[in-house]
Image 1 (cartoon, rainbow, N blue to C red):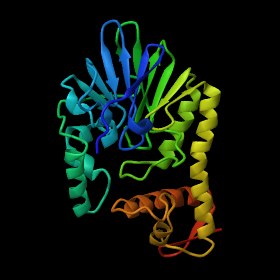
Image 2 (cartoon, rainbow, N blue to C red; image 1 turned 180 degrees about the horizontal axis):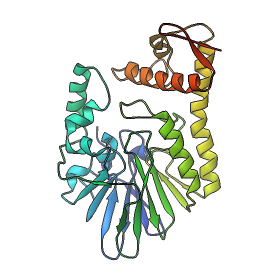
Image 3 (tube, rainbow, N blue to C red; image 1 turned 90 degrees about the vertical axis):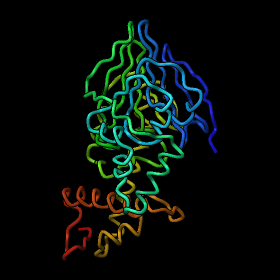
Length: 296
């Protein structure tokens, strides 16, 4: 059942609209930025449905349902990165982007419509890395951080020194790069870029909320990306004997054994392939026979 409403927490002139359950999925934390001329909202979440604050523009960090569930509350201009724009234009494209079997994709499309209130937004327009939104005395600059999705972005808000990093969310689950448009290599490059941006506050879309200070943010990034290294270690141990991609997917690198759903196998398979590619490139894994892999 929907838990409506949010809690406002301010950082300088930036207001984080903390979603229900500290922004845990299916909720998320949205961001409200006010300038002297305009106001914008970043990532209108499920918690904004029925209680959305007014805004002159909407920015979307990426086209996942928990970040756009509140879009229906707005007729204001909507902007997203060009590589995620098609998924905002069409709910069917968004559903297909999860890379599920056809019957599961149909169910996801209904979920997007009925549980997340998502409708096609053909009016949404594209931004690119470095695009600046001038609100009057306050700017919001797009920082392209691909990996989670191809168009995943953060936003640097000045002069407050607030960097919203969206789903580089520092949770113990670790980085997610299991959708059709995801990329482990891009995700790691995006994490490195985040480290290079000195900010006072770093805002995440989910439970970890806002982190103060670059050193603390970097420490938490270390733990977050450490999950990727743990997945590598798990895979290398499993490949002491030759294994196929399907066997690796069954072993699971991402989800715990109790997690069920049509999404599990496709995500595990795409994740396994990306780790294999990287470990083969590093000379740590070899293909010993057709379709079977073993650690060196």
